[in-house]
Length: 267
Length: 267
Image (cartoon, rainbow over all chains, first blue to last red; front, side, top):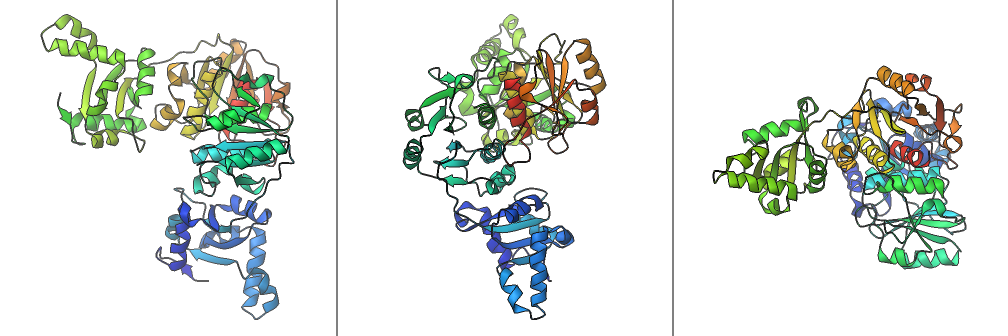
């Protein structure tokens, strides 16, 4: 297999566009062996892989199997090849790999993964709603925490950070492959939550809300808001319960991902 | 007052060194009006201020008072000036200010603050211990959470990120001005904790630990470890109780700052 050493290679240039949101219509990039294994396990379609030559033997076994088939194909065995003809593996130089990565020290592999339209039917008991949460690290961490806490899905409202960005991908650590994460319009979401009999728990700093420790809700959607501005008026109006975290100390607020973690693990 | 427009200005160059840890022996930089107000409120010594001309009227009132005295001094009133002769205010261009900031869009003010040797006597009931926590955002967020949860102090062990770095400062949001944060040698710390009758609660992912929900400890130090490697063998050996968070979902672990938040707010 030839090694791509130029950042101007056409495939590399096309793939690099996926670092920008507007080009991520159908696919996105993931970085590192852990995420690639999670993607393969979840049955996501891997469109192509860029791997440093020396990291080739670290490819997840499912992918290595496909590659074996592919090399057989070069010997003329067409039937087996059809299973894998969508997968293309590109060996690249370290420099080319870095040009596709968002982190300073990428792990040696980048994969292009086809987007999958997840669905949520609201038959579960716990959902997390992120409304206009802007920091990618916060968004990713909250999805990871929702996964750890056994939530049934995450719904993104408004201009919440794009989960297909490298930073969100990195902090999710593969949780998007474990539970459905979808973007929705708020009117539609609140309608569906009511129809499904889920209580809307909106977090707020205001005094006319109850401490989370006194909340008893068995099936609910927890709404977390923007880092600076908090939740919207709509999320307050749609709430069945307004909830806050009592803070005995001097800090004025908690980081939104920490607050979400405390709530998800105690409600 | 003259406006400094060159990044090569001697004062600016000296101050810029404080962005690097090895130069932060006696002082450090803070960014933004909120942190400056917190520093002034806490009685920290502000050595000098770099402010954009148009942001001058936003200076905290305590500082503006000093400035008024300083301008009086130019009319010859020496007695009142002695109170403030250590404070130097520098008006700078946007470009110069940016060269002193770690963030992309600094708020228009940077202050140099004298380091203060905090002390902890372990007479309180709740302490947070960070051992080799490397991400500055995680360190800052955990100190902010400890502040919100009413903890009495934070102790840093090993190569935990320097709290005087811009990134830790930003995520602490001033909590270092609310509670003592000190660096200690681990042998000394564990000795003092035992002497003070505080239980050592070490967090771990291992199975031979108890779920945090069954822990009853009234006076304790909670030990959080490195993001990848977890806590050290020493922290495990010194533990009175090994504690973990049960995760009903699929994620393999929680972000360390989220885990610390859950524990600090429920123990």
